[in-house]
Amino acid sequence: MSTADIGLIGLAVMGSNLALNIAEKGYTVAVHNRTASRIDNFVAMATEQGLVGNVIAKADIAEFIASIKRPRSIIIMVKAGAPVDEMIEHLLPYLEEGDAIIECGNSLFTDTQRRFDYLKPKNIGYLGVGVSGGEEGARHGPSIMVGGSEQQWHNAEAVLTAIAAQFNGESCCAYLGEGGAGHFVKTIHNGIEYGDMQMIAEVYGVMRDGLGMSPGECADVFKEWNKGPLNSYLIEITGHVLAAIDEQTGQPLVELILDKAGQKGTGVWSAIAAQQMGVPATAIEGAVAARSISARKDERVAAEAIYGKPNRTKTEVTLAELEQALLAGKIVSYAQGFAVIAKASEENGWALPLATIAKIWRAGCIIRSRFLDQMSAAYAKGGNTNLLVVPDFVELMKEAHPSLRKVVAAGAVGEFPLVCLSAALSYFDSYRQAQGTANLIQGQRDFFGAHGFEIEGRGSNLHAKWPSTLEIAALKPVIGG
Ligand code: 6PG
Image (cartoon, rainbow, N blue to C red):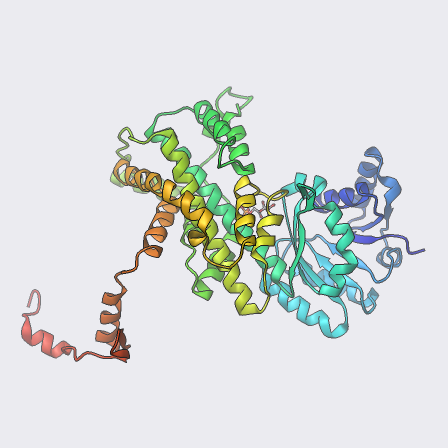
């Protein structure tokens, strides 16, 4: 008999936790996994948690499909990339028109768009869903960014809305647009996550190397900051990471962890998307680049041997200035991330709701913060404008940018790399100046390529009569000749 409200395939940690979350919210979930032992482990876990009554476990794929109410909603939680395509092909023979596949991994949004387009003529719905919040979020309430077939979203809406995190009684799950919209928004969420993490790490670097603070002292500062405008999950966990002691050695754990950061791709995808659409996202790009530099440990060790240890003189910045610098960097980074989302919305015809996106990021996800509540309120007042010119944030930025400036200057003098914070400051300084320096670039482009320039009141695509290489050579002796 078909009694399950929803199906779920892929019982690794994230999939298992999502299934347990669904069962806990009172929905019946059918589960399946290619490796049957995973199903047994899951059933044992569900039994232990008193949730097995809401679970239908099926090792046989046909029986699994048959156990789900029609039109079927089937979550797949497999590794991004080829395994998703393989799973779609595996499922297709069993599906009927109106059924839907709901893919909840960190997929590249263009792959999701392609899969959506592939299944549409077959009348099979495809939802590409970004799920943020890690393993714990999946179990107790993640932020859920839905994209794809709108009709099939409504079939799964009750379940997805119920399992998501709640913020002031509102579910942190929303339908954002067709095709790859959900996975695109999740990608930019991760890009912003990279920026937040990198800027926090840079500030930790100033505390450690410029102010000579111990990890425990840094931890106390982050715990304090978590009570103020920076209040967020990432600031909170930073306090815990810095306070952790390695059991084996009794040393602060953070000092033993190798300074090489990993990355799985979403940061790079954010930077590529931003560049492809011509939206400057320098804080995200800086954060991605900083991870790549971190990974080149051997090269860094060799370069330090050549240039000598950085000359890290005592830094003249206060903790209050560091807090404000982080806030200013964060405003810039979110301004950039949301500008990328706004542009993608326009280019793909998605009508992505910025206020809603900020709303569903207020709880459950990795970048959840008080700041996002302020942002959603600001965007709700209207417009897709750059956050830097949204009135509430203008005030914050006016107050905070002098500290960012001071910290970045201290970094330059004190030989601290502040890749992301300095990128944020340069963006701010470029964005808020009416007169830049690209007039010279246009002159250069016209000089060597006749690319044209514009003069107000005289028109665009104008050219100057520049001297030729031969004429220049006649004017000046060739160097060394
Ligand atoms: C989330 C996280 C999650 C995962 C990232 C980490 O929102 O829950 O972003 O998706 O932790 O994939 O990405 P990196 O391995 O690239 O840091």
